[in-house]
Image (cartoon, rainbow, N blue to C red; front, side, top):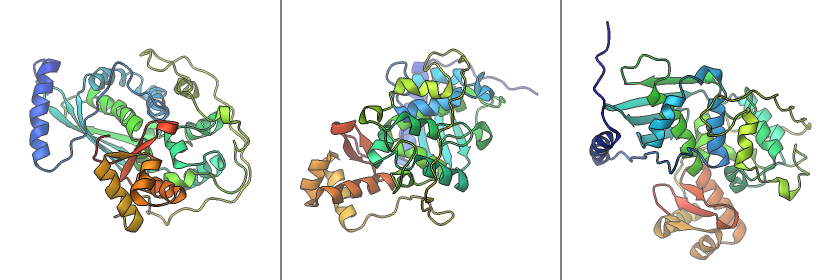
Length: 333
């Protein structure tokens, strides 16, 4: 038994066909979310690079992932949707192939330990999502085996293409597409692992980086590769490096956790949250000052409400530091 492979289709022709198929799909009410890469660099922020570096670091994937880089760079991932524990995508090849990637939730005990180890090192949701914290925190979050990122045994793939390989190029393209999506919506990493990002925020008591100097609180994206022993975006197999020493854990009260099976979800905003979301949707995007002016709320209330809208998936963060703006999900800034 053998497959009859389809004839080669140029990238331009694939794009034309994909545009037609996506237009039809959009008419059914499906919100199309393509992956767009500018230039050759697939991911540019801390979280996007960390996801890609984690994938690249596993020998299980070393012979498969490179085939997906070209596909994701040329815009072949025409739709990518991230939900709790699952990624569904459509990839343009000789046909439009449907790809599904399932990721096991982060184990409850591993998440509790991760929160405890990072306590005191992250002050706000904005810092967390923008990667603005000390290197010690990022090293702990990226630690292979018991960090935030999944290992190969926690990931399963499925694709409708005729390639019988364990990981086809369409799946590989989607894995990189996930990293690119985390550049724009880093909160989706926590959605995918089915944990509440707010539990990582600073708790009462000392943490592994509570005395870090302000100058050390921003992790350069170039440092991400070092956490996984990789040269980022080189396209070459990585040279192994000695593993980083595990940071010491300071005994402290364990952080609270929602009841089993309950994660941060996209509930219906009410009261002040609903008014703020309406203002976001009307304006397209708001910074903190504009949000205060639009709602009449004080700075603390606005900050907390904006963070909650991001956690629940109603809004996303764009920009860095003083240029931070909040955009309603489904809107363009």
